[in-house]
Length: 268
Length: 361
Image 1 (cartoon, rainbow over the protein chains, first blue to last red):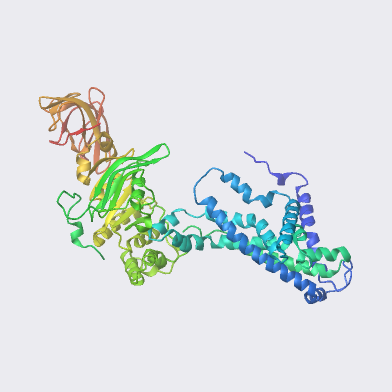
Image 2: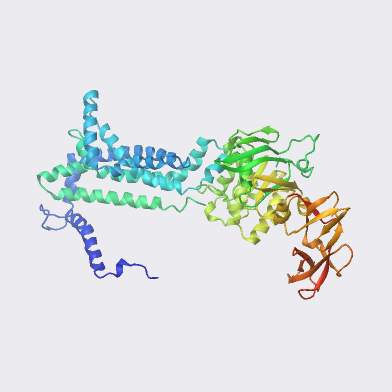
């Protein structure tokens, strides 16, 4: 029997090419113009690395970049730890009532519009700031950790579900206490999944604008919110350079993510 | 290596007055999963140093029983003792037993040597390194210490699983259908290997299988299970020659089953009378193996009248399928040279003296 094949429809190739161009042409343009020697973002003035140098030498960019990395690192560690426990809790105790509901609760940030979460956090953190007087990066770290949990949770759960349950039984049979079975068998086998989850969380945190914009205090710009602020004044190729650097970092991390989630070694 | 010849001094039976406690003792063990009864009050006593097999079809409760002994499950009722010590509520890591899993369950992130050493390291044994080398030699995998399980063949993985389970020198080794994933040739080889290892180590083996031939060739004693119960326990010869129930007779090898009645020391069966087995009386179900059935001239004394339905040549021998007057089919295993004639030929069916068994329903 012949299956329906969309590739055989007339115009398929044109639509495909058009979609790919729309997806990639702007990014390619941005990358190219980040090497532009001209002041303009629209006119080509020869190859140059001056905007990279300018961005790297800009104290505001340095501060924002450092803040972005610190927040993303903290969020990645916290989110992957929480997600690991959530994954163990949802996959290692058989079927129980309300498991589906727990998936929904864990994945809240994927479903609730980000702007809603951002406003809610703004209100709550404003109250906390007044009550405690603390205005540090902790709020951003907490907020980022929270919305990164589902991104870390998915690869970790996939890894756990692909793991042969009899491995833990075998460890117990070979005199490992429940903690040592976890420490010596479950955790090492789970490690690539946790690393992948942490990387995904890192990338998601690095990229966030909406929640950061609402939660940050004065002088707490991350790279994306700094760039947004710049665009409100004048667009300079410096923004292109920062974007390209972010893109390169993200591509590197996502490549590592896909390498780690190829689960060739979960079974003997 | 522990044990030695004293551990296998008695074949199977541990009678009263014997000093060693049984290696494994299961007393009225029951296990329910929700509304399903997986084990219905099983009693079992396994003498130290024996190769003991739990045999039965899938779903008979043999694996559940093994998991109760290992501690992966706790019984709903009853008691499990290992070496005379009640371990019913003990978690698996505090029981002196090790398991060879059906899926092998080798740790994929550890080398062969680290897999074998795992139990020893968990016990904090100082001789883990030497003992691991010794175990790898025992299963003939000396050169494979630094490989990963994924780099080994199925048979090699099987031997790593064995070495890993034997390394801590458990009081009892539990084997959960360990050969079912191997092809026939490799399975035969591993059967011999397992017998050798059991003999050399003197450790009590409890082996689960659904393969009756495997059970007969390897075991010192067999418990035949069905429907969550142990139907019969005995040596392979006892189980084969004297099956206690119709199920055991049908499950172990081939069996002819004949209904009849015993009066005045004679079994009145369809097509004639034959000497009755000892102790039988009234309506009975009798069983006899095809190789204990012979052909005689029609109407000879102590034979049943029958006609030949079909004769099937197997190479080394020949099976004659005979029909009694009431339609009961009897298979007779005859020498390859026998010539029972064309279908429809009249024969007398004779039974070897003492070979007829009375079955309990």
